[in-house]
Amino acid sequence: MIALWNGRPVPHRLVAMDITGNTIFIPGATSGIGRALAVALHERGNVVIVGGRRTELLDEITAAHPGIHGYRIDTADPDDIADVSRRVIAEHPDVNVLVPMAGIMQAEDWTDPAAFLATAERIVETNLLGPIRLIAAFVTHLRTRPDATILTVSSGLASVPLAATPTYNATKAAIHMLSESIRLQLAGTSVGVTEIAPPAVATNLMPGQKESPIAMPLADFVAEVVALLQAQPDAAEVLVEKVKPLRFAEQRGEYAQVVDRLNRLDPHRS
Image (cartoon, rainbow, N blue to C red; front, side, top):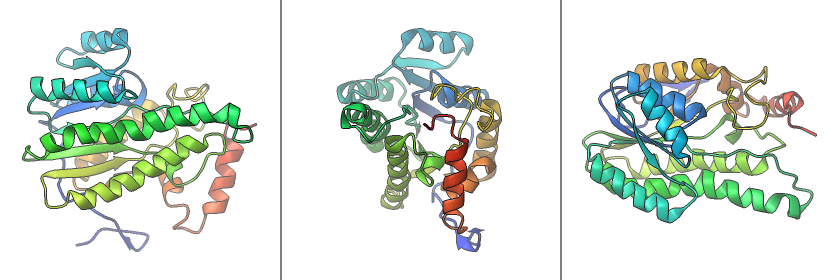
């Protein structure tokens, strides 16, 4: 049977992901969604390896959760990605899940190139080139594993733009289409591709976001994500209920209304 959403087929990831018994590398897991997801997956019987730039945060998470491994990695540095990825594979040859989690979100003023260009380049380096380089570093190894997953992280803003963050929106739209495309190329291999598309979540991704009344509580988001991964192991997209108005706005004929509502609620708008 083909699953349907609003009468349209929902693509499957082709290779089902088990929620336990994996060895998972999550670069970008020292705070926010990445850290909460790492802890939740560790508690479900997975070997979890976290990566991040700040060694004090890596030490904190590994001390608080014995069994989680930590590696310092700068996902904006291509040489660091290559070196650390080789170390992770050599020291954890069972690694079969990659979650390129690191990302930055910053407001930009596109009326003045001097005000946005450096910020935009930094966001592209981290949010788009980082995951591309990580996947390049791991895909050959993942294809040797009998059941492997690339778990990408996009955003509801891949489907509906937030005016204050043009480049962030664009990088997340690119991650969505990258996920769709490499899933097709990896069909017939042991590697599946699943995309998580978060709504606004109460983290420190942007100033004030943690306290925003429209942000989904972090614990609630991660609990729903893990429940969806368990209930729908072959789903191509992991969509919590709160992100669906954004993800399906155009399909439902509500795009203009959702764009207007989102940007009226945005605490970062000028």
